[in-house]
Amino acid sequence: MKLLRKRDIPEERYTNAFLGYGPEDSHFVIELTYNYGVDKYDIGAGFGHFGIAVEDVAKTVDLVKAKGGVVTREPGPVKGGKTVIAFIEDPDGYKYELLERGPTPEPLCQVMLRVGDLDRSIEFYEKAYGMELLRKRDNPDYKYTIAMLGYGPEDRNAVMELTYNYGVTEYDKGNAYAQIAIGTDDVYRTAEAVKLCGGKVTREPGPLPGISTKITACLDPDGWKTVFVDNIDFLKELE
Ligand SMILES: C[C@@H](O)C(=O)SC[C@H](NC(=O)CC[C@H](N)C(=O)O)C(=O)NCC(=O)O
Image 1 (cartoon, helix red, strand yellow):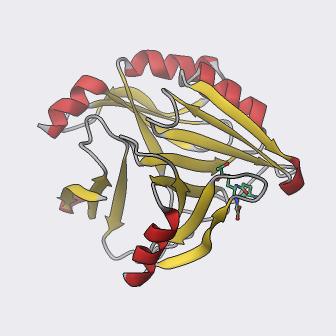
Image 2 (cartoon, rainbow, N blue to C red; image 1 turned 180 degrees about the horizontal axis):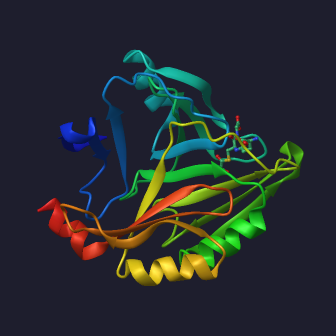
């Protein structure tokens, strides 16, 4: 990944770094936050991983190992499937799944979150967030079902991978993973849609003090947070 932007907000005692495979106005990126003086977080059990598509998982794993990175699952076909995967862990314990695929404009391709009722989540992500259910796959041998949802095909866009483990309805979310951010043309309408679908709006829509970017924040049925950011305001912020 490339470091795209770093900003220090001393008055709020944190520093952000934005990393990804392409510019923030057209790519999914990871926002890492350092809160002054805090060097450890609890990742919890609900957050799964970020997915990165690579053309050769084994070669990537060798590179990760050569740089002293931690590999928690060696390359090989996913249990119950064919896709070659591996898992690596960053220095804070966040997991990254490497997925073997052809070339893609969006290598940073997934956020996996565990949910307690897959159909409830699918309905919410479709109706409140306007995502499309791209595929759903049950893996009875390993007692889980996944649903991929997003705004475009998986081979060219970052998607949400929601995982339901049979019989598990709740997860400890820890205090490390914060949120995904999604662009919207109208934060007010988005907040309305979320409320109509039974989601909880935790930050009413409106401009942020100081920078005037309009945002709204909400929780999905499992309590996973999403921040919606006005598309035009966001582009101005990047200027
Ligand atoms: C290719 C795509 O389908 C996957 O990579 S699925 C990855 C798979 N997911 C799970 O097992 C989810 C259920 C699990 N109990 C959880 O909550 O994480 C996976 O991680 N497989 C591991 C493996 O070694 O194959």
